[in-house]
Image (cartoon, rainbow, N blue to C red):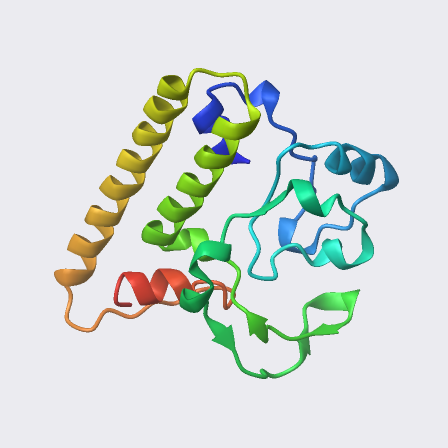
Length: 175
């Protein structure tokens, strides 16, 4: 949603449901499903991020999986230990790592996919979409350069995280 808002230049033209908690575990209400089904185009992160999608019928012809262009670069997580965080039940973190946007090269590919689709579906001047896209990509590249510099100044830097969701970040920035 953030990438779409930046490329369009108007957050009011992008629908993103109000989600309490971690969006990876969102369970849509019927009203949310109806609104999502009406989106055109309907951007998804892919890489198994939208767990709710298994229980919802979506118009396949409108779906744009923003990570499909780099499937070979996705990180697969082998079977991991099942555990729980409080009373919500057991789970594990095996499957496909979904936080692809934490590698800014992959995020840039997502931005390009979104911009190409918006150019087909929106009545906006392509030059305006391109200008907004370029601004966003420049910011991503600046952050990427800063992270690579930070990592290069350390000898074998370590990453400590609260959850195993930083696989792309660690791989991209040598952590």
